Amino acid sequence: MSREAKGGKNKAFLMPKPHSNQQEDRNIDSTLRPTAWDEYIGQEKIKHGLRVILDAAKKRKEAADHLLFSGPAGLGKTTLAYLVARDLGGIIRTTSGPAIEKTGDLAAILTNLTPNEILFIDEAHRINPMIEEVLYPAMEARKLHLVVGKGPSARTLSLDLPPFTLIAATTRENLLSQPLRSRFGATMRLGYYEPADIKKILERSAAILGIAADLDAVEILARASRGTPRVANRLLKRARDFAEVHGGGGPDGTAIDRTAALATLEMLEIDEAGLEPSDRRLLTTIIEKFNGGPVGINTLSAALAEDRGVIEDIYEPYLMTLGFLQRSSAGRVVLPAAYRHLKIKDRGELL
Ligand SMILES: Nc1ncnc2c1ncn2[C@@H]1O[C@H](COP(=O)(O)OP(=O)(O)O)[C@@H](O)[C@H]1O
Ligand SMILES: [Mg+2]
Image (cartoon, rainbow, N blue to C red; front, side):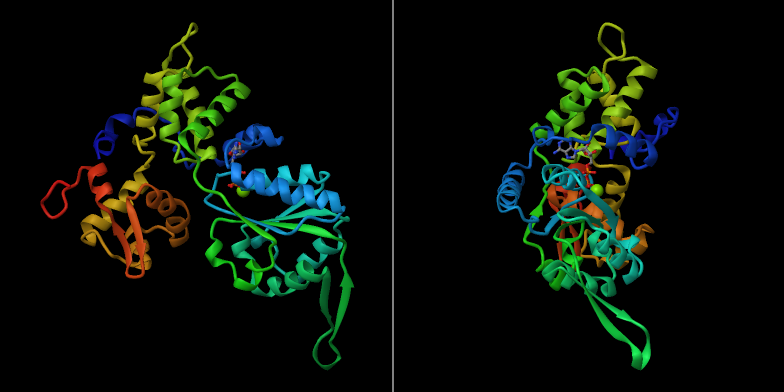
């Protein structure tokens, strides 16, 4: 609330919002993307599980099992796919669910794979069902069944495919069809990172980018990073911009110190829990317009004029992790912790 109320004074700074600047963010993403296992911080269970699968495949000299990586955006799914590919010899071909429009597109990709290549399909929950039908026998038996011709003269052509490993990534595992899900040898579910891991990621990124940041600043930025490496890296960049323009600490006055870190968050209207204005608007809308909930997702989406997918993929997972929001069959409900955080009374009472 407090930051929202102070919003007016922040308007003097014309700085990008955390969700904008996509090209620049893609560039930092690739500069900072870990290229070796020991640079990939946290997610120890997943790394260990992958180690076993990859070592076994290498020992047998076979393609590794198909893998599904699921979890919210920015947690390191693409990075992990590239690390797996590097481990297995380096060849990876990437595409995404929505990019494969026709069965012919997928057929072309599959028939051009070299043996033991990795095929990475991002946004796998957006693969169209007709394409999925082609994918099943390809994953299971390395066969490609193609229908050639039309009408009574149509016939099915069956081609053998080279051994390959499919890695699919999704932010919405529950939208994947059961037949597709069941064809992966393992599913790795990435969760939000611990603050200590986010701090390590910030320190690594600061070192790569040549940014000076003191311990206090790292701590503050880490807490506002939503347990998400991509957000952490983005905040670090914005804090550097701030320190360069408005002054910071250190010998040359451009290091990110406590003051610069806090001012950056204030400028971006990100509060100490990492909530952005859109997150707070979601919560206050449910509280003010729907009496705290439950409210159905479509009603909420209309009230916020926000795409349902964005609400479900970006806002809700983190709010649920904080214990601020609950999804029930009746709809979304705001929980007491959110009232306390927003300093809003529930039916006249301060919780
Ligand atoms: N475990 C990690 N350790 C260090 N940096 C990471 C880690 N996971 C992700 N990152 C950083 O976050 C960025 C986003 O990761 P990415 O793999 O693109 O996420 P996703 O594909 O899940 O959206 C990467 O460019 C990388 O710099
Ligand atoms: Mg990705």
